[in-house]
Amino acid sequence: MRTSFHVSLPCKSIKSTKSFYIDNIGATLGRNTQGWADINLFGNQLTFIKAKKFNFNNPNYVFEGKILPSFHFGIVLEENVWEEIYSKLRNKKLNLVEENKFLKDKSGEHNSFFIKDPNDYMLEFKCFKNPENIFR
Image (cartoon, rainbow, N blue to C red; front, side, top):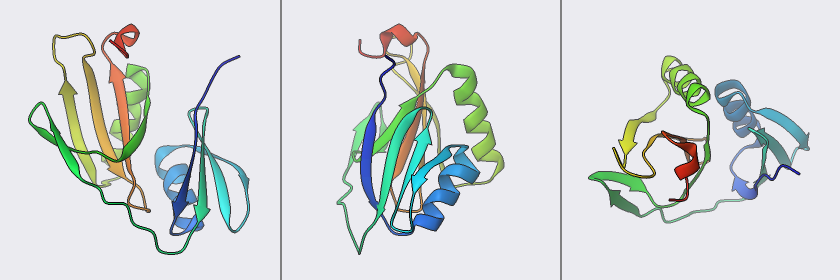
């Protein structure tokens, strides 16, 4: 059995959340109602639930001289898919945190970029130089 993750998060608007993930990222819509929606993000299940006002304190941290959001989630992709998504989102002129290479010439070397969704969640896309080094 192939494993995948599931995360459930509050959202401000089901409509804008569906539009962002489907129209911009290229995800697909799963089961949904007016109050919640399942999004298929590369075979992983994101469930967004309409909630009243919510707030996460989003402190940042520094990694290799870059300021990154400590509260974020994301997906690890093959390099060609990562490049396709990055190019597509840049062409849409969305507010991306530009591409960075981390751990250059070390175990775990990867490219990464972030984008904020309509609920102010930071979504990270990664691709590893050597996928077998994801946890090394």
